[in-house]
Length: 312
Ligand code: 13P
Ligand code: SF4
Image (tube, rainbow, N blue to C red; front, side, top):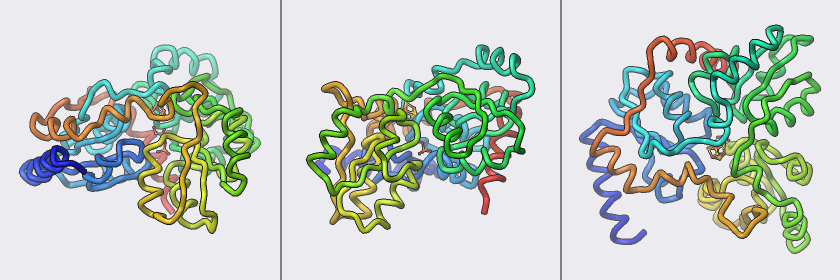
């Protein structure tokens, strides 16, 4: 860390105390922001942490739907998102009005939505899932009940295959996870024959087919720490490599390559959470996440159902 960053971290530490704030960070934000957070986790762990906290302010170093979920679960806290432009292609690709029409056309379906969606979509859902608990929750839906799943078609297809359940899918995708190149991954694996390929279920089916292990960010992290293997090719957003390397400094982690000559495996939304933006959010207590109480209450019920099904 350089002197400039050291000074910002000092400011963040002072302001965090003054504001009685907690900083929650997703594994996909930059390592330096993860290191300043009080808690780093996956989508499920972060919603549980947000629900429990007694801090006056939650600074959410993540994306909009995560901060909104925190507000839904713990409405008496002030929730700030360092950059309001931190959206998500999955949430944006599933507008609530279009989703309402889709649900209305399939009234017999049980509506499961991935947490990567707006409060409006959550309010139209029977239950929410994250990538950590999705399989368990799909299996909890009574056999014979058809399932409508939104918004991620890749996670949906993966779950349908894994559980054998009939699932009608909304056709959304994540701009980061659809970017990995099967062709380049095969070439990389040829150069590192001992490397273990691991992938997040938001990846496209050909990439998932090459993975020895598929899981949520926290599951991938746990897997790399416990595995006797020493080299991993990681098909998910690059931010997770920071924690993998921290937990297993002796192991080698290679990011799976995107198709183009780009940094497309960096989530442009997550990376908006710079140290400066976190500091400014603590100074200004803004941008604040708010939502109408009626919508909050409607979106809360399916999230609480998810949390109850995730316990134990
Ligand atoms: P998890 O945190 O559930 O692994 O999801 C990854 C993701 O894409 C978050 O936006
Ligand atoms: Fe959304 Fe994909 Fe970024 Fe996660 S990685 S926040 S799913 S765009």
